[in-house]
Amino acid sequence: MWDIGGRKGRTLLLQGHHDRVQSLCYLQLTRQLVSCSSDGGIAVWNMDVSREEAPQWLESDSCQKCEQPFFWNIKQMWDTKTLGLRQHHCRKCGQAVCGKCSSKRSSYPVMGFEFQVRMCDSCYDSIKDEDRTSLATFHEGKHNISHMSMDVARGLMVTCGTDRVVKVTCIIVPISISV
Image (tube, rainbow, N blue to C red; front, side, top):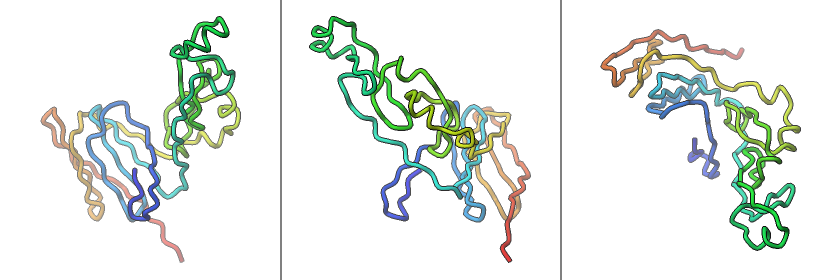
């Protein structure tokens, strides 16, 4: 999701579907983003929380934790008489790391990772249990969704899919009133 209105240039990643996202709808009243995917998944994202921007992936010829060379770093492999390792990236800090230094996976919803992703061991250790609490809810649309439309005023969501099914679903949109 891009913050173009604020002209800040932020890019937020929201990872929560197992297949292609086919349709989106932003509910301004509740500050929620609803997304539907071709596998029938429906995600409702809470956009009323402060989110962290995903880091840029750093480039390196060797692991930025243990300094072992990656497999394309022939000079360092020759000098150290070691085999090169495969490069991975920590999804929290963006560092280029080897598999040994990024052996853990975790969800990190504040950065948009609702499913478990690779993290370097030090970033994994820095995450608290409450940081793993989901900021989205997931629902099953029970058919291949190719398009979705919402009428919040009537409390209706309409989905259609490649299975030639049109579904009209009653939704309840929570409204909070400040006094």
